[in-house]
Length: 295
Ligand SMILES: Cc1cc2nc3c(=O)[nH]c(=O)nc-3n(C[C@H](O)[C@H](O)[C@H](O)COP(=O)(O)OP(=O)(O)OC[C@H]3O[C@@H](n4cnc5c(N)ncnc54)[C@H](O)[C@@H]3O)c2cc1C
Image (cartoon, rainbow, N blue to C red):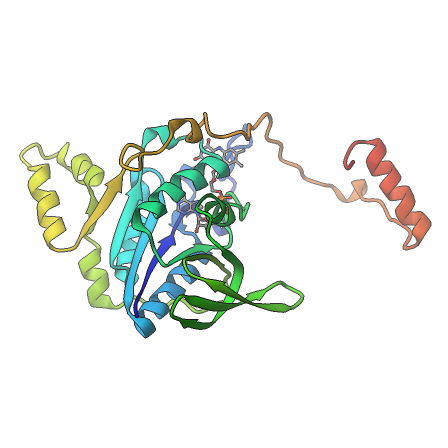
């Protein structure tokens, strides 16, 4: 029996290459100054899905939500071995926090009705690790987070080992289920050169339209038809395609509001030595409560 897997992949700024220009004066990320990359743990999630396909058959679909530029991670998903790529893109998605993002992505997943949904544990920019669990909750799916090893897959049952940092836990679940995958789960495969060359030209319609602006003789419909025939059209869904309730999307669907962003740099002179005793800890906790750091 084959398994249909959906992998959620996010395009993120490469936070490993932080330079002096990486932050704007207002404390927000200067995305233009950082190269965009495939979120690292999403590569591990994709690798696990590809291993499931190799062993049991089925299919792998990659979905990204973002601007048209996010099609780049979907191209990479295709050349790494995914069968289908879908970009969820819509201006009305802008300013979505994790709650809205997970609602929108859950609408996309629902349309595909997969056996297994795989996410990275965490994105290296937003860093919340909330999106996977929130999608599972919205779709009423069982979830296994922090997956390091797929122990077994048989019929409608999956067993996976979670790495909790200070130990492991084996969890059995019924399918469909959602997994979040950590970076020690596997070594993402090196793409095959032929597949890479083929999928380099995969595009979504918005990319074809943007290229056609400089070449008015290009027939966008004909190019998209041709890409589709060759399996190189990255599908594009908007919020209407998803039949999404707009009150749960974008700014309206995002209860989190950013009031102030502050860059905190602690100097050595600001450090304080706490005596390693019960009274030292009590004094420190008291001070933190008094200055409203905790409590
Ligand atoms: C207060 C606040 C305000 C924000 N405002 C904005 C804003 O105005 N504009 C803006 O662009 N962003 C904004 N964001 C960022 C945006 O909400 C997050 O990037 C997004 O919700 C994903 O959360 P995360 O990065 O923490 O993902 P995590 O929960 O850490 O990601 C876990 C996994 O979920 C999946 N995943 C997450 N996001 C996506 C995606 N987009 N596509 C596919 N898979 C995905 C991946 O598998 C990923 O590994 C804001 C975030 C916060 C907290």
